[in-house]
Length: 83
Image (cartoon, rainbow, N blue to C red; front, side):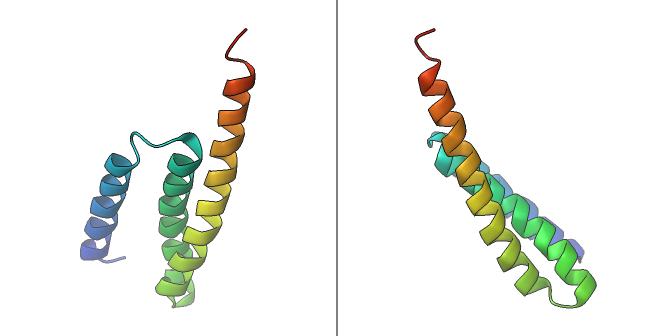
């Protein structure tokens, strides 16, 4: 990754973190998962020569995984709220 790409990724992730700060767990988990997945996909994709496709696949997989985990955490918290 070039220095410019690293800076853009950092700025993008910071913006996402600020934007989803007040969101529910599923949205927040999905956004964080998508960002982390995109970075991981870019890293793996750069090794195979196609960083863009790697970032897209990583963002989709990370976003879905993060949303599922965030939703499950919300459900767990709701079940245990009264105890």
